[in-house]
Length: 342
Image 1 (cartoon, rainbow, N blue to C red):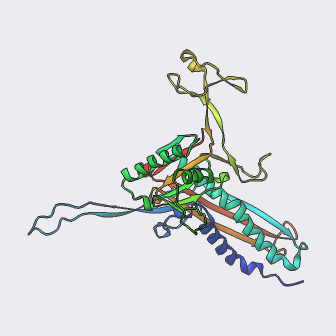
Image 2 (cartoon, one colour):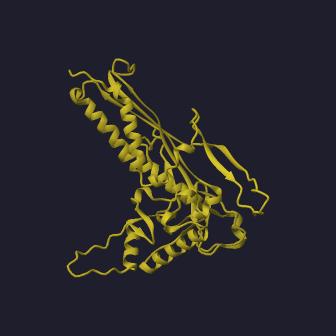
Image 3 (cartoon, one colour):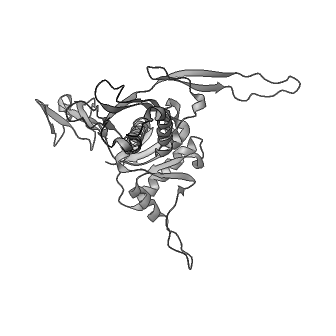
């Protein structure tokens, strides 16, 4: 049997998978400046540098310069999402080609499972913390175009250039924008309606299974969640805090463990009503300026145990562990603008 040097390749695999996450995510543009990071502790806490400085002052001739202050602060941030998975390959299974099989296994796992989940969490985080994230249904190109103009106004009113913004959207939404902006075709030219920017904003088309306002992470062990991964958030019922009936809003009554939608809500019965919250919705588009967020993905550990070391079975064992999160800065929530399905 060919000798296996998998143990010597773990570091190489780790570097490769880290690079795959950095490049492969749809949200790679939001990865934060690694120079502004301190060391990550075992508890998943990372110090992020913020720089505060004074603005310009009046200059008085003959009196020199007005001294200002600049301060570098390290703020601790907790990475909320700590995920892992273990894979075991029997010693006799494809023994002569195990290195290739294992390498492909981890690469596909990263591409098909890890990267989509990272993106899904990031978009849900931004939707949750955006200053502007309303429900909208688009039946005409003009409706989609008008809402994007509102997003552009919001970005420019908050002092950022559209050229620095990113337009994340569904393929359907991009199609509506294409129809809203007719193009001309010169004689002898092949038809081509594709475009990578819109009003100088970079466009990123996002797969629907990553583009939701809220998701539920599956723990990988509970009955029904063994496969792990994530799904669109199902939400939950809670007592409404409304003091008057909100037009168009759904209210529910509870009987045992059953919730029933109220056909004709009445103000005097609000004390007995529940509402459904936290339910995930499909996102139509998000305009984001990267300065509003800090995204970090770090492969904390990729471990390999050879069959002679593995005490559980005569098998090759791989253990994959990941810390990651996305933070939205409180003073920059206005730099995230989007809509989601009704």
